[in-house]
Amino acid sequence: MNLLEKGYAIPPLSPVAMKLVELAADDNCSASDLANLIEKDPSLSVRLLKLANSAFFRTLYPVTTLNQAVVKVGFHRLRIMALSVSLRDTFPMGKVSSLDYEEFWRFSIYRALIARYLARELKTCSSEEAFVAALIMEIGLLVFFDLFIKESPEKIEIRLNPLKDLLAWEEKKYGVNHRQIGEGALRYWKFPDHMVLCQQASGNALPSKDCDPLVKICELSRILSRMISSNSEEFSAPYELAEKYFGLDQTVINDILLTTFEQVEDIAGSLRVELNKEEDILRIVEKANMTLSRMSDLISESQNEPGPDSLPAFNSLGNRKDSTVKTLQAVAHEIRNPLTVIGGFARRLVASTDLDSAGSKYAHIILEEAARLEEFLSKVTSQTETEQE
Figure 1 (cartoon, one colour):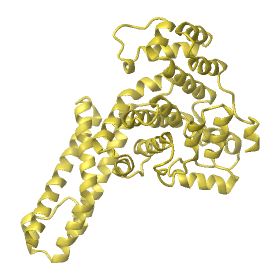
Figure 2 (cartoon, helix red, strand yellow):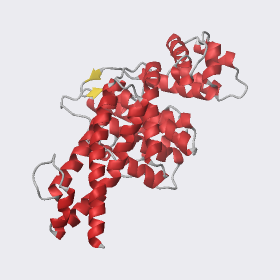
Figure 3 (cartoon, one colour):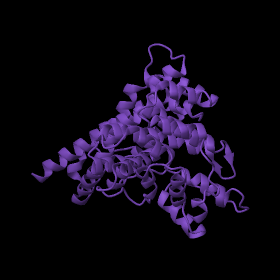
Figure 4 (cartoon, helix red, strand yellow):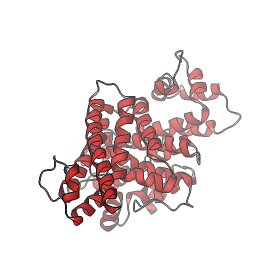
């Protein structure tokens, strides 16, 4: 950490971006001042014009000058964009040894967009600061990789999920973890203290309710983004956390996820990151389908009969042993909430995507399976309640 404090192995951010951050925070700065500075960075100029003309800003007339783009995007968002672009350009792309930089930034963008919309919903901090804080949440991993792993002859596989396991492994092997390095890097780059605080979450649980709102939003965005980036994440678990800690119901989370998918290509384009939105939608839908399959298996096991595709005949419940009926009741209670979450997500996806898309077609199949299980739950509940009377 002493090396980090001296700036060792930490690449500098773009001088234009850093100056832009300074000017954008100056109340006396004009749009022309910012435009004149941006002209010195052709890459930033092109991406600013592209972003200003994107669907994200719903432009009726094309923006053709940097001055117009600055006004359209806004000073604060421009400051955030400059930081994001500079950080993205500071590190290479492609796959180097065991680290896929393209994948790293792709999932970082999803996390950042989710954080932005969470902040807008909760209104507890700046949505644009939430975007950047979540975007760079794992930035220390890139510096960590350069320091310890990049030139190592040992074959090391890096997995961000579960985060707490990765941090524990890093500390055990190297005496420091990438979040600690990230904290040092952000201080070196002179990021605001409340953004630096986001590096201190350990991944063990959501931060306490009295901690900085930005920290809590970034941590929830990390958990929600795992629905896209991790194959092992349980589909309904992030919804339950959002409800428990923030009072956000499944409808709000579904809207945030689908809005993220609607905007992700424009933001990825401005940061020159390639992604396939359709594949990412299919990944999260497949996760929902796997959860439904586990529910169906659970029901089959609880009725003490083989065959995951056959649910018990409802008129036969009264002839079953009392223990079997009680087991079915317990199963019904356990899967009701996850089933409601999955059905809600599938309905929202069908309503917001192209009917011919693979994601929409898959969602229709999930809706049919969810309806079948919901009907079973309803009849089991009705039957067992009748028997208890």
